[in-house]
Length: 76
Image (cartoon, rainbow, N blue to C red; front, side, top):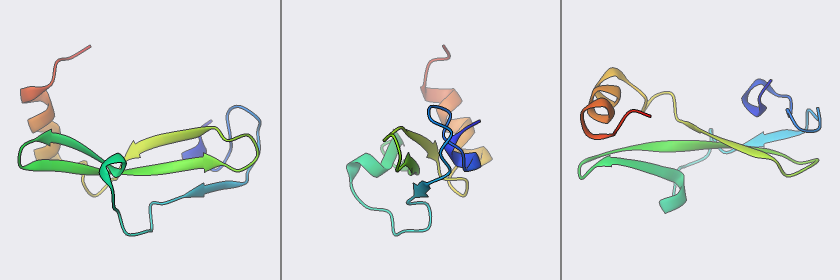
């Protein structure tokens, strides 16, 4: 269960809102992979309890971005 699936895992509310169809803006709205590559972040928030989740925008999470992350970032 996740906010992205329209149900809050904390309170089971279905009153979920997202910015994924809005124009992206601001530093909080992106992840920098390298000096020339970044990905926009989609936010999902439960209007009942305030719980929120972040996901990389699907159009930005392509094979090129994944390869760059694997090259630069450390695996947990």
